[in-house]
Length: 337
Ligand code: NDP
Image 1 (cartoon, protein in one colour):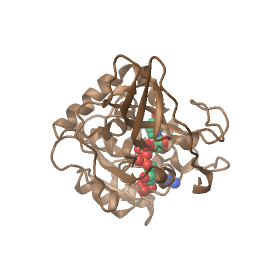
Image 2 (spheres, protein in one colour):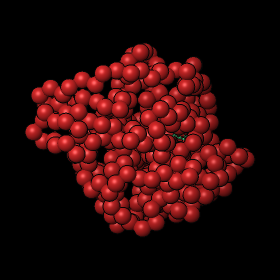
Image 3 (tube, rainbow, N blue to C red):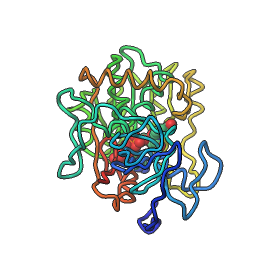
């Protein structure tokens, strides 16, 4: 488990942009579970961070100075930024964020309720429902999961950024949706605000029994964000020709040694089921189509989103660590300025 001691704040000079570069003032930082994977050595789909170097993740910022023709001071942009107050970035790695409606205000607990009525998406949606997590939900569920009307879709990590989008897309596709999350506040939100069929708190009671009760006809699609014990409880319930989407395994990210749970292969075998992992960049060529579909559902009020906002650049490590203790409802972001 990362601790605050693992992070260090350092003062440094801000360099000047060269041709083709812009200077961006950071407004929002996205903290994401996958960053934990970059904090360990070994082969993965993305190189590890180097000890002593600045961490990077998705961000939204304002152009302060531009040496690139497509960007002007005042433009709101998104891209991969280092965790700094100002970054010099290559213009070809940036995208303008349209429809800015001003910064989102955090609620008292830093949790924003999903908007009850459709509205212009805020600029922070570029980090959430209209960004990487939204696209992950969209392509993972629709391409691998192939959900069909009337099927039962189970989602772990259901109250997170990816999970709550998956739940709602599955509802749009006419499925019966069962979400698994780590608090009663989250399960209530999933049922009452997002209208999913059933929601189970994996931290209380007998998870296996609760899932059996919630899925009396078995599971057609399992969208897995967490792995571990939760998945061990879901997989015995799969039906013939089930599809299991391996999106994330957050329950394992802080383990020193991989653990061995019940092995899934017998269930896959006897059910002729599919289990497939994916990384969202597999779908890079189709991102604009995915964002278009998500934005359409947002504007029609069929898709809602929630954001948890931690205020202050100095609280970025705390916001990141909070992902592993379930502090967030929906997308966790840090409001910098
Ligand atoms: P979330 O917003 O879902 O935040 C993480 C959530 O995980 C927490 O709120 C917490 O919710 C839950 N969690 C933390 N620890 C555990 C645990 N030990 N067991 C069960 N649940 C736990 O993050 P994202 O939506 O950004 O990401 C969700 C998953 O998708 C992650 O595993 C991430 O790595 C993966 N991902 C994969 C991508 C890909 O390309 N394949 C792209 C983006 C994300 P709770 O209170 O319910 O426990």
